[in-house]
Length: 280
Ligand SMILES: C[S@@+](CC[C@H](N)C(=O)[O-])C[C@H]1O[C@@H](n2cnc3c(N)ncnc32)[C@H](O)[C@@H]1O
Image 1 (cartoon, rainbow, N blue to C red):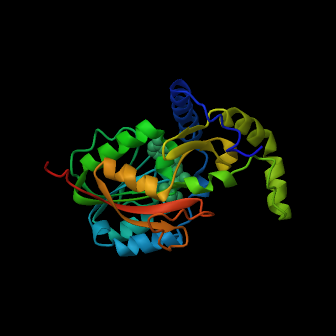
Image 2 (tube, rainbow, N blue to C red):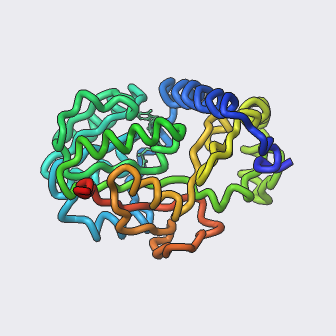
Image 3 (cartoon, rainbow, N blue to C red):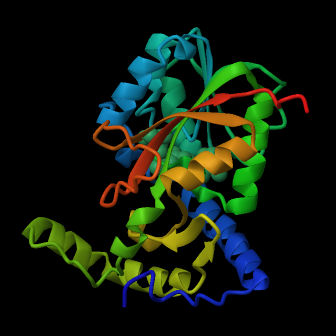
């Protein structure tokens, strides 16, 4: 059974709330426990990231907040461009590693759900790489965007990536789409004792809302529930929270225009600018 057809389309509001609670619990448990450092220490930018970092180099020259800095995959590139970089991550091992690796930047253990310690307008850019904002449910994502609007300076820049809803039909459980590459096949099979029960548990908590879905995908042995949204839905969501979409790119760095789905590209990269509410 594929992941999408396993979802009951008649989910109630209570089920939606249960899904959001479960998403917070499982994602916080998985990431907060640490142990994923080795996945995120390489520093090569992916094509969409390279295009966005170059296009927005002026905004990235100021004070930058990095959400979910991980093993500093993006941090070194930000440190090379910015006046000041502050990174937060929920995992202690990620923070300790970044502190050692980038002594000119500052880091703290923190949850991107709680940014109230930062003053208003104190950052010129916020960067959230590798779909980190997708750990949040729909209500939490709305709150995050409001907080980012508050802590960014006027015209501040938001760079982030997010799972592409158009690819939801391509998601499959751990026993499907087993690769023909023998090494990867062996790796997938060895992980089945962990991924199968994870998937069985979390696929039941998936949720489909207007413009988005919360889905269990293969990341880290199916131990996470991720937010998926398409390009146009993301533009509407940004506008509701005071951001203008400047660019949406597929992973290969090509532009995804309004109305395009980028089917087959599992994550989309966004650049958005903080706007002031218009005076009515
Ligand atoms: C997919 S990794 C991306 C790491 C890095 N941004 C990159 O691009 O390579 C997600 C990172 O976000 C962190 N993270 C997950 N949930 C978080 C939360 N609620 N608040 C802050 N960091 C979080 C994880 O510990 C992990 O380091």
